[in-house]
Length: 146
Length: 116
Image (tube, rainbow over all chains, first blue to last red; front, top):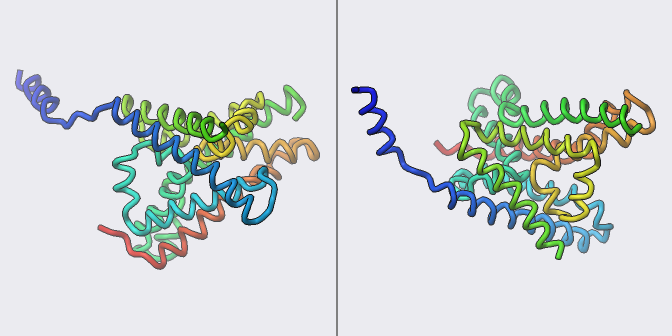
């Protein structure tokens, strides 16, 4: 009985997050990030006078720089609290995970802290990205010949 | 028109991520990892290439493009060198992003102090 009552009380006072609002917000913010990405591509294409196809790299570096800078300045977390997955899923989330690990472990020394832990959060993306790309690439190579 | 496509695709990917975050106990790390694997998977049948053509920058911004670029670079080299080429070309297209993230976060972490 006590346990049921406890669970009931916990459920009652746990702040309820509105899933619908979260979804709408992350759709809008994520979509805006996509539009920003496309705009940046065109911008770099105009500035550097290179074909649109090759500007993806410049756009990604720009977004990574913005994500890292905002994290280092300390207000990226506040924006993520509002924007949720809208900023975690785009490449800014990758930059954020690397930058926040770097900042957090910086105090423990340059080698044992920063060097050993910079990939602590973002390493999973690289590891599983590489492993899956290798396996799927192998499948494609065997099925379609590249 | 491509801006609308970019908005729809990037928005949908983020929406799916948010739905997973809200309804399961998975962390953002799980979600981004899952999306990278999905991005690589979609390239077995060149599906992601078509999405990039359709949505432009909107398809390059979500983390799914990371998996797409990994397998894409690997396959380009694999055409020339076979199975070893998969390893040679893996980072060809993504190295700029990874290296930019490493260098920028290294120097920024030297400059800034974490806010506690």
